[in-house]
Length: 79
Length: 335
Image 1 (cartoon, rainbow over the protein chains, first blue to last red):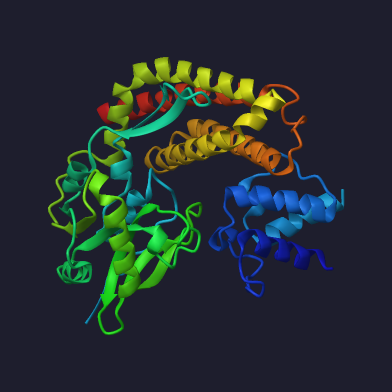
Image 2 (image 1 turned 90 degrees about the vertical axis):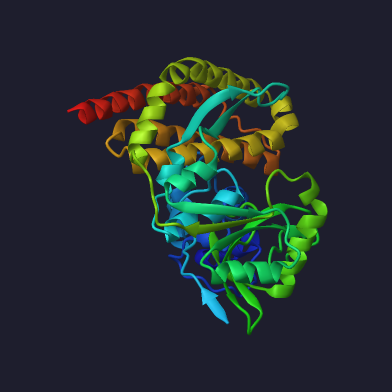
């Protein structure tokens, strides 16, 4: 599966949105209810899904939008 | 009849509780600065006796109650302990130019999917309009307890009545205060000092405390966090209390950051220390939260005590730099 699609589905899963909820890559995810503890849940799911380790030093900004998260994950995958 | 006020949700900051989340959009709608309210707050680490995990907490307390502060801004706050006809009372208030803040119980509010029919939870709704033909109120509300994003929504008369009745039934008898607050504009602002001047004055009056007990209490708290986090069994035992306490602490720190950024923008160096410290508290919450979900002890994050020593160092630096900025501010005022 395309990583961006996989990340989109994980966001929908942790925010408990309807499966077909549309959102643009630059929509602030706080508007979908991605608050601090859900970010932690998303980190755990991303690490499992992509077999990566996300640094403890990531910031709130890294999870602002879908595009930010795609960049973060792709950056780690390309390391 | 339709009456709608163009009140905008305020999402820049979660301040104290949902009463203020409902109040701030109203203050802004009437053209007054919310900074004036923040200026009256004192933020300090205080002893929190009888709490095993958090023997110290970061407290935010106003030096005045909200009524006289709003009065100085030219806003009037009227209260009604209990309504016998909530739809009529709210509609009448809105017709008279008063914006109601209404206590409800989320247990009986269908739009709150996180709590509806699950948990009795008192909450404040901001009512920004009414449409009597379609029998709906315009409200500003968030979707769930943890979300800080408020938005405009429609609420039917029936749902509101049900949520208000449940609040009356489950909370009002032991409630400190009223069930409805009406805010209106008297257009007679009597502010003498600006928000910044009030804040600088109260900071100066708190200098001894902030440089003394505030910092020693901060050291005690950091020592406690270090002690729990460095031992896996202790961390396991207190994870949820730590996360809850860190959530509260981070909200207060964010309010402090907002206030500094908006009311003393020249204090850039202090802001940098505060922001760096806030990042560390958020990192600590993330690490503990991850531990709670995976049960894998974060050896890397706690390989040394740098996260804790840095938090304390940044607090000391912040207080020192803040008072440099306060002195500069006072010097300029004298000139």
